[in-house]
Length: 354
Ligand code: UDP
Image (cartoon, rainbow, N blue to C red):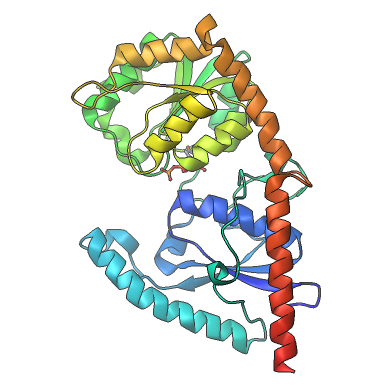
Protein backbone atom coordinates (compact mmCIF):
# COMPACT_ATOMS: atom_id res chain seq x y z
CA UNK A 1 0.00 0.00 0.00
CA UNK A 2 1.49 3.35 -0.96
CA UNK A 3 1.51 6.29 1.42
CA UNK A 4 -1.20 8.02 -0.60
CA UNK A 5 -3.62 5.16 0.09
CA UNK A 6 -5.72 5.01 3.23
CA UNK A 7 -6.46 1.25 3.24
CA UNK A 8 -6.16 -1.83 1.04
CA UNK A 9 -9.20 -3.80 -0.12
CA UNK A 10 -9.17 -7.23 -1.77
CA UNK A 11 -12.21 -7.67 -4.00
CA UNK A 12 -13.12 -11.24 -4.89
CA UNK A 13 -14.93 -11.53 -8.22
CA UNK A 14 -17.19 -14.46 -8.96
CA UNK A 15 -16.23 -15.41 -12.53
CA UNK A 16 -19.33 -14.24 -14.42
CA UNK A 17 -19.68 -11.09 -16.52
CA UNK A 18 -22.79 -9.98 -14.67
CA UNK A 19 -21.06 -10.20 -11.27
CA UNK A 20 -17.82 -8.66 -12.38
CA UNK A 21 -19.27 -5.43 -13.78
CA UNK A 22 -20.76 -4.06 -10.54
CA UNK A 23 -17.80 -5.20 -8.42
CA UNK A 24 -15.37 -3.45 -10.75
CA UNK A 25 -17.41 -0.28 -10.58
CA UNK A 26 -17.49 -0.42 -6.78
CA UNK A 27 -13.70 -0.89 -6.87
CA UNK A 28 -13.25 2.20 -9.02
CA UNK A 29 -15.35 4.26 -6.58
CA UNK A 30 -13.18 3.01 -3.69
CA UNK A 31 -10.02 3.96 -5.60
CA UNK A 32 -11.41 7.43 -6.19
CA UNK A 33 -11.56 7.74 -2.38
CA UNK A 34 -7.91 6.68 -2.06
CA UNK A 35 -8.45 3.05 -1.12
CA UNK A 36 -6.04 0.68 -2.86
CA UNK A 37 -7.87 -2.18 -4.57
CA UNK A 38 -6.65 -5.61 -5.63
CA UNK A 39 -9.03 -7.72 -7.65
CA UNK A 40 -8.93 -11.50 -7.41
CA UNK A 41 -10.64 -13.88 -9.78
CA UNK A 42 -9.99 -17.31 -11.25
CA UNK A 43 -7.10 -18.15 -13.60
CA UNK A 44 -9.47 -19.88 -16.01
CA UNK A 45 -11.66 -16.78 -16.22
CA UNK A 46 -8.75 -14.40 -16.74
CA UNK A 47 -7.50 -16.53 -19.63
CA UNK A 48 -10.82 -16.03 -21.43
CA UNK A 49 -10.92 -12.25 -21.04
CA UNK A 50 -10.97 -10.19 -24.22
CA UNK A 51 -10.48 -6.88 -22.35
CA UNK A 52 -8.76 -6.25 -19.00
CA UNK A 53 -8.87 -3.02 -16.98
CA UNK A 54 -5.54 -1.27 -16.47
CA UNK A 55 -6.68 0.87 -13.57
CA UNK A 56 -6.75 -1.90 -10.92
CA UNK A 57 -4.26 -4.64 -10.07
CA UNK A 58 -5.47 -8.16 -10.71
CA UNK A 59 -4.40 -11.38 -9.01
CA UNK A 60 -5.43 -14.91 -9.91
CA UNK A 61 -6.75 -17.60 -7.60
CA UNK A 62 -7.61 -21.11 -8.76
CA UNK A 63 -11.00 -22.80 -9.08
CA UNK A 64 -9.24 -26.14 -9.56
CA UNK A 65 -9.97 -26.08 -13.29
CA UNK A 66 -7.31 -23.71 -14.59
CA UNK A 67 -7.56 -24.82 -18.21
CA UNK A 68 -11.28 -24.63 -18.84
CA UNK A 69 -13.13 -23.33 -15.76
CA UNK A 70 -16.73 -24.43 -15.43
CA UNK A 71 -16.71 -26.02 -18.92
CA UNK A 72 -13.92 -28.37 -17.81
CA UNK A 73 -15.92 -29.62 -14.81
CA UNK A 74 -18.37 -32.47 -15.41
CA UNK A 75 -21.21 -30.86 -13.45
CA UNK A 76 -21.97 -27.55 -11.73
CA UNK A 77 -21.87 -29.38 -8.44
CA UNK A 78 -18.41 -30.78 -9.09
CA UNK A 79 -17.24 -27.29 -10.07
CA UNK A 80 -18.52 -25.65 -6.90
CA UNK A 81 -17.10 -28.33 -4.58
CA UNK A 82 -13.64 -28.02 -6.11
CA UNK A 83 -13.83 -24.23 -6.32
CA UNK A 84 -14.63 -24.03 -2.62
CA UNK A 85 -11.71 -26.26 -1.72
CA UNK A 86 -8.99 -25.04 -4.09
CA UNK A 87 -10.36 -21.47 -4.18
CA UNK A 88 -10.20 -21.07 -0.37
CA UNK A 89 -6.68 -22.42 -0.35
CA UNK A 90 -5.33 -20.20 -3.10
CA UNK A 91 -7.21 -17.18 -1.70
CA UNK A 92 -5.47 -17.70 1.69
CA UNK A 93 -2.13 -17.86 -0.13
CA UNK A 94 -2.93 -14.60 -1.89
CA UNK A 95 -3.91 -12.87 1.38
CA UNK A 96 -0.62 -14.08 2.88
CA UNK A 97 1.35 -12.87 -0.15
CA UNK A 98 -0.21 -9.40 0.12
CA UNK A 99 0.55 -9.30 3.86
CA UNK A 100 4.19 -10.32 3.24
CA UNK A 101 4.61 -7.65 0.59
CA UNK A 102 3.60 -4.99 3.13
CA UNK A 103 0.08 -4.45 1.73
CA UNK A 104 -2.15 -6.40 4.13
CA UNK A 105 -5.85 -6.50 3.35
CA UNK A 106 -8.46 -6.03 6.05
CA UNK A 107 -10.65 -8.73 7.54
CA UNK A 108 -13.77 -9.95 5.72
CA UNK A 109 -16.07 -7.02 5.13
CA UNK A 110 -19.35 -8.43 6.48
CA UNK A 111 -17.67 -9.09 9.85
CA UNK A 112 -16.82 -5.47 10.29
CA UNK A 113 -19.51 -3.63 8.42
CA UNK A 114 -23.26 -4.18 8.01
CA UNK A 115 -24.72 -4.40 4.52
CA UNK A 116 -25.31 -1.07 2.80
CA UNK A 117 -26.72 -0.41 -0.65
CA UNK A 118 -24.71 1.19 -3.43
CA UNK A 119 -25.24 1.85 -7.12
CA UNK A 120 -26.31 1.92 -9.87
CA UNK A 121 -22.84 0.49 -10.45
CA UNK A 122 -22.35 1.66 -14.00
CA UNK A 123 -19.35 3.67 -15.23
CA UNK A 124 -19.29 7.17 -13.85
CA UNK A 125 -19.17 8.91 -17.26
CA UNK A 126 -22.70 7.65 -17.93
CA UNK A 127 -23.97 9.06 -14.63
CA UNK A 128 -22.34 11.66 -12.38
CA UNK A 129 -19.23 12.08 -14.64
CA UNK A 130 -16.96 12.60 -11.62
CA UNK A 131 -14.47 9.82 -12.55
CA UNK A 132 -13.19 11.00 -15.90
CA UNK A 133 -11.40 7.78 -16.88
CA UNK A 134 -14.39 5.62 -16.05
CA UNK A 135 -16.06 5.20 -19.44
CA UNK A 136 -16.42 1.42 -19.56
CA UNK A 137 -16.34 -1.63 -17.29
CA UNK A 138 -13.04 -2.64 -18.86
CA UNK A 139 -13.31 -6.40 -18.43
CA UNK A 140 -15.22 -8.37 -21.01
CA UNK A 141 -15.75 -12.00 -21.92
CA UNK A 142 -16.81 -11.10 -25.48
CA UNK A 143 -15.45 -8.79 -28.14
CA UNK A 144 -17.94 -6.01 -28.91
CA UNK A 145 -18.66 -5.10 -32.57
CA UNK A 146 -18.41 -1.44 -31.69
CA UNK A 147 -17.89 0.18 -35.09
CA UNK A 148 -20.61 -1.85 -36.82
CA UNK A 149 -23.13 -0.97 -34.11
CA UNK A 150 -22.37 2.73 -33.77
CA UNK A 151 -22.10 3.33 -37.54
CA UNK A 152 -25.47 1.70 -38.03
CA UNK A 153 -27.12 3.54 -35.10
CA UNK A 154 -25.76 6.87 -36.34
CA UNK A 155 -27.98 6.48 -39.42
CA UNK A 156 -31.20 5.86 -37.47
CA UNK A 157 -33.70 8.54 -36.38
CA UNK A 158 -34.04 9.54 -32.70
CA UNK A 159 -35.89 7.02 -30.48
CA UNK A 160 -36.61 4.79 -33.45
CA UNK A 161 -34.54 1.66 -32.67
CA UNK A 162 -35.36 -1.33 -30.51
CA UNK A 163 -32.29 -2.82 -28.82
CA UNK A 164 -32.56 -6.56 -28.05
CA UNK A 165 -30.24 -8.60 -25.83
CA UNK A 166 -30.46 -11.52 -23.40
CA UNK A 167 -27.11 -10.89 -21.72
CA UNK A 168 -24.10 -13.17 -21.49
CA UNK A 169 -25.64 -16.44 -20.32
CA UNK A 170 -29.28 -17.04 -21.30
CA UNK A 171 -29.92 -19.73 -23.90
CA UNK A 172 -33.26 -19.46 -25.67
CA UNK A 173 -35.11 -22.48 -27.02
CA UNK A 174 -35.15 -22.59 -30.83
CA UNK A 175 -38.91 -22.13 -30.84
CA UNK A 176 -38.55 -18.99 -28.68
CA UNK A 177 -35.83 -17.66 -30.95
CA UNK A 178 -38.09 -18.10 -33.96
CA UNK A 179 -41.05 -16.36 -32.27
CA UNK A 180 -38.77 -13.50 -31.26
CA UNK A 181 -37.35 -13.15 -34.77
CA UNK A 182 -40.83 -12.86 -36.29
CA UNK A 183 -42.06 -10.61 -33.48
CA UNK A 184 -39.22 -8.20 -34.22
CA UNK A 185 -39.83 -8.27 -37.94
CA UNK A 186 -43.60 -7.82 -37.60
CA UNK A 187 -43.22 -4.86 -35.21
CA UNK A 188 -41.95 -2.81 -38.13
CA UNK A 189 -39.38 -1.17 -35.90
CA UNK A 190 -35.67 -1.13 -36.73
CA UNK A 191 -33.76 -3.33 -34.33
CA UNK A 192 -30.25 -4.02 -33.11
CA UNK A 193 -30.21 -7.61 -31.86
CA UNK A 194 -27.36 -9.27 -29.96
CA UNK A 195 -27.27 -12.99 -30.81
CA UNK A 196 -24.19 -14.58 -29.24
CA UNK A 197 -22.27 -16.87 -31.62
CA UNK A 198 -23.34 -19.90 -29.60
CA UNK A 199 -27.02 -18.95 -30.21
CA UNK A 200 -26.81 -18.09 -33.90
CA UNK A 201 -27.72 -21.54 -35.22
CA UNK A 202 -31.18 -21.14 -33.63
CA UNK A 203 -32.14 -18.23 -35.90
CA UNK A 204 -34.82 -19.15 -38.45
CA UNK A 205 -33.55 -20.23 -41.90
CA UNK A 206 -32.60 -17.32 -44.13
CA UNK A 207 -33.38 -14.77 -41.39
CA UNK A 208 -29.97 -13.11 -41.61
CA UNK A 209 -29.81 -13.34 -45.40
CA UNK A 210 -33.19 -11.66 -45.79
CA UNK A 211 -32.60 -8.94 -43.20
CA UNK A 212 -32.03 -5.62 -44.92
CA UNK A 213 -29.76 -3.08 -43.26
CA UNK A 214 -32.63 -0.56 -42.98
CA UNK A 215 -34.61 -3.06 -40.96
CA UNK A 216 -32.07 -4.41 -38.55
CA UNK A 217 -28.59 -5.39 -37.48
CA UNK A 218 -27.65 -8.64 -35.74
CA UNK A 219 -24.31 -8.72 -33.89
CA UNK A 220 -22.58 -11.28 -31.65
CA UNK A 221 -21.84 -8.69 -28.91
CA UNK A 222 -22.18 -4.91 -28.66
CA UNK A 223 -20.91 -2.10 -26.44
CA UNK A 224 -24.19 -2.10 -24.52
CA UNK A 225 -23.65 1.12 -22.56
CA UNK A 226 -22.84 3.07 -25.72
CA UNK A 227 -25.83 1.53 -27.43
CA UNK A 228 -28.27 2.34 -24.64
CA UNK A 229 -26.92 5.88 -24.47
CA UNK A 230 -27.38 6.41 -28.21
CA UNK A 231 -30.15 8.86 -29.10
CA UNK A 232 -31.57 6.49 -31.72
CA UNK A 233 -32.54 3.89 -29.08
CA UNK A 234 -36.21 4.01 -28.08
CA UNK A 235 -36.67 0.72 -26.20
CA UNK A 236 -34.73 -2.24 -24.76
CA UNK A 237 -36.10 -5.78 -25.05
CA UNK A 238 -34.21 -7.48 -22.24
CA UNK A 239 -33.92 -10.61 -20.12
CA UNK A 240 -33.82 -8.21 -17.13
CA UNK A 241 -30.39 -9.23 -15.83
CA UNK A 242 -29.54 -6.92 -12.95
CA UNK A 243 -26.78 -5.09 -14.87
CA UNK A 244 -28.91 -4.59 -17.95
CA UNK A 245 -31.76 -3.33 -15.78
CA UNK A 246 -29.52 -0.81 -14.00
CA UNK A 247 -28.01 0.30 -17.30
CA UNK A 248 -31.44 0.88 -18.86
CA UNK A 249 -32.57 2.85 -15.80
CA UNK A 250 -29.37 4.92 -15.74
CA UNK A 251 -29.67 5.76 -19.43
CA UNK A 252 -33.42 6.38 -19.38
CA UNK A 253 -34.48 3.59 -21.75
CA UNK A 254 -37.95 1.98 -21.29
CA UNK A 255 -38.11 -1.82 -21.45
CA UNK A 256 -39.95 -4.84 -22.83
CA UNK A 257 -39.24 -7.67 -20.42
CA UNK A 258 -38.61 -11.32 -21.22
CA UNK A 259 -37.09 -12.65 -17.97
CA UNK A 260 -35.60 -16.15 -18.19
CA UNK A 261 -34.34 -17.36 -14.81
CA UNK A 262 -32.58 -16.56 -11.52
CA UNK A 263 -33.22 -12.97 -10.30
CA UNK A 264 -34.64 -11.88 -13.65
CA UNK A 265 -38.39 -12.36 -12.86
CA UNK A 266 -37.93 -10.33 -9.64
CA UNK A 267 -36.10 -7.57 -11.51
CA UNK A 268 -38.85 -7.61 -14.14
CA UNK A 269 -41.48 -7.17 -11.42
CA UNK A 270 -39.65 -4.12 -10.05
CA UNK A 271 -39.30 -2.62 -13.54
CA UNK A 272 -42.97 -3.07 -14.36
CA UNK A 273 -44.79 -2.58 -11.05
CA UNK A 274 -42.53 -0.44 -8.85
CA UNK A 275 -40.62 1.84 -11.20
CA UNK A 276 -43.22 1.54 -14.01
CA UNK A 277 -40.67 1.74 -16.80
CA UNK A 278 -41.50 -1.41 -18.75
CA UNK A 279 -44.03 -4.02 -19.83
CA UNK A 280 -43.78 -7.77 -19.46
CA UNK A 281 -44.13 -9.92 -22.57
CA UNK A 282 -46.08 -12.86 -21.17
CA UNK A 283 -45.34 -16.51 -21.91
CA UNK A 284 -48.06 -18.92 -23.05
CA UNK A 285 -48.80 -22.22 -21.27
CA UNK A 286 -45.77 -23.79 -23.01
CA UNK A 287 -43.47 -21.14 -21.57
CA UNK A 288 -42.96 -19.41 -24.93
CA UNK A 289 -43.58 -15.72 -25.59
CA UNK A 290 -45.39 -15.63 -28.95
CA UNK A 291 -44.60 -13.25 -31.81
CA UNK A 292 -47.94 -11.38 -31.49
CA UNK A 293 -47.29 -10.60 -27.81
CA UNK A 294 -43.77 -9.41 -28.56
CA UNK A 295 -45.03 -7.17 -31.37
CA UNK A 296 -47.77 -5.68 -29.14
CA UNK A 297 -45.38 -4.93 -26.27
CA UNK A 298 -42.85 -3.24 -28.57
CA UNK A 299 -45.53 -1.03 -30.09
CA UNK A 300 -46.96 -0.17 -26.67
CA UNK A 301 -43.62 1.03 -25.31
CA UNK A 302 -42.36 2.72 -28.47
CA UNK A 303 -45.37 4.41 -30.01
CA UNK A 304 -48.74 4.06 -28.30
CA UNK A 305 -50.34 6.58 -25.93
CA UNK A 306 -50.65 3.80 -23.34
CA UNK A 307 -46.85 3.72 -23.19
CA UNK A 308 -46.43 7.45 -22.62
CA UNK A 309 -46.22 7.16 -18.83
CA UNK A 310 -43.59 4.41 -19.14
CA UNK A 311 -41.48 6.58 -21.43
CA UNK A 312 -41.80 9.57 -19.08
CA UNK A 313 -40.98 7.50 -16.00
CA UNK A 314 -37.82 6.20 -17.70
CA UNK A 315 -36.58 9.80 -18.01
CA UNK A 316 -37.45 10.49 -14.37
CA UNK A 317 -35.50 7.45 -13.09
CA UNK A 318 -32.48 8.41 -15.15
CA UNK A 319 -32.29 11.63 -13.17
CA UNK A 320 -32.72 9.82 -9.84
CA UNK A 321 -29.98 7.31 -10.76
CA UNK A 322 -27.52 10.10 -11.44
CA UNK A 323 -28.34 11.89 -8.20
CA UNK A 324 -27.80 8.89 -5.92
CA UNK A 325 -24.25 8.25 -7.16
CA UNK A 326 -23.32 11.92 -7.36
CA UNK A 327 -21.57 13.66 -4.46
CA UNK A 328 -23.76 13.49 -1.36
CA UNK A 329 -26.22 11.00 -2.90
CA UNK A 330 -27.17 7.87 -0.94
CA UNK A 331 -24.71 5.58 -2.78
CA UNK A 332 -21.86 8.06 -2.42
CA UNK A 333 -22.58 8.49 1.30
CA UNK A 334 -22.61 4.73 1.89
CA UNK A 335 -19.26 4.31 0.12
CA UNK A 336 -17.83 7.22 2.17
CA UNK A 337 -18.99 5.55 5.39
CA UNK A 338 -17.50 2.23 4.28
CA UNK A 339 -14.16 3.87 3.51
CA UNK A 340 -14.00 5.73 6.82
CA UNK A 341 -14.67 2.47 8.68
CA UNK A 342 -11.92 0.74 6.66
CA UNK A 343 -9.49 3.53 7.44
CA UNK A 344 -10.26 3.38 11.17
CA UNK A 345 -9.67 -0.37 11.26
CA UNK A 346 -6.55 -0.09 9.13
CA UNK A 347 -5.21 2.46 11.63
CA UNK A 348 -6.04 0.24 14.63
CA UNK A 349 -4.15 -2.68 13.02
CA UNK A 350 -1.12 -0.50 12.28
CA UNK A 351 -1.01 0.86 15.85
CA UNK A 352 -1.38 -2.64 17.26
CA UNK A 353 1.68 -3.81 15.26
CA UNK A 354 3.88 -0.97 16.50
N1 UDP B 1 -23.51 -6.69 -22.42
C1 UDP B 1 -22.68 -6.08 -23.35
N2 UDP B 1 -22.90 -6.32 -24.66
C2 UDP B 1 -23.89 -7.13 -25.11
C3 UDP B 1 -24.74 -7.74 -24.16
C4 UDP B 1 -24.52 -7.49 -22.83
O1 UDP B 1 -21.78 -5.33 -22.99
O2 UDP B 1 -23.99 -7.30 -26.32
C5 UDP B 1 -23.24 -6.45 -20.99
C6 UDP B 1 -24.32 -5.59 -20.37
O3 UDP B 1 -23.99 -4.23 -20.55
C7 UDP B 1 -24.31 -6.06 -18.93
C8 UDP B 1 -23.79 -7.49 -18.99
O4 UDP B 1 -23.27 -7.68 -20.29
O5 UDP B 1 -23.41 -5.25 -18.18
C9 UDP B 1 -24.91 -8.52 -18.79
O6 UDP B 1 -25.23 -8.55 -17.45
P1 UDP B 1 -26.71 -8.87 -16.95
O7 UDP B 1 -26.71 -8.81 -15.45
O8 UDP B 1 -27.71 -8.01 -17.64
O9 UDP B 1 -27.00 -10.34 -17.47
P2 UDP B 1 -26.23 -11.76 -17.36
O10 UDP B 1 -25.27 -11.77 -18.49
O11 UDP B 1 -25.54 -11.82 -16.01
O12 UDP B 1 -27.34 -12.73 -17.52
